Amino acid sequence: MRKGVLELCILSIISKKDVYASDILGELKEAQLIVVEGTLYPLLTRLKNEGFLNYRWEESKSGPPRKYYTMTEIGTKVLNDLNVSWQDLTKAVNKITI
Image (tube, rainbow, N blue to C red; front, side):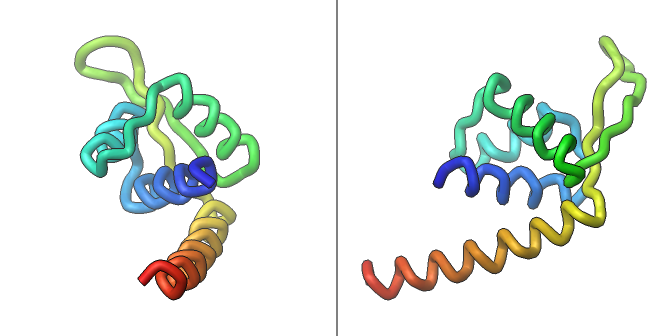
């Protein structure tokens, strides 16, 4: 379940703007979803290989070039589907627990 929620969160973050992996980790941390690099990078690679994300390299003012992630059209559709599923799930759980 956490994996699916994490995908939803990561795709949502990337859908707002092009982001660097540390930006994603920062937003997740702010939301109190602690994710380590060893979890994030394989997930980003899988999402890219499935065609949901693209990336580009940009030179950094300090240090090596950075990989910035962007959404693809397919990724946007998947995000929309995940949002619908999330709303359905929270509605069902709320019926039982509230």
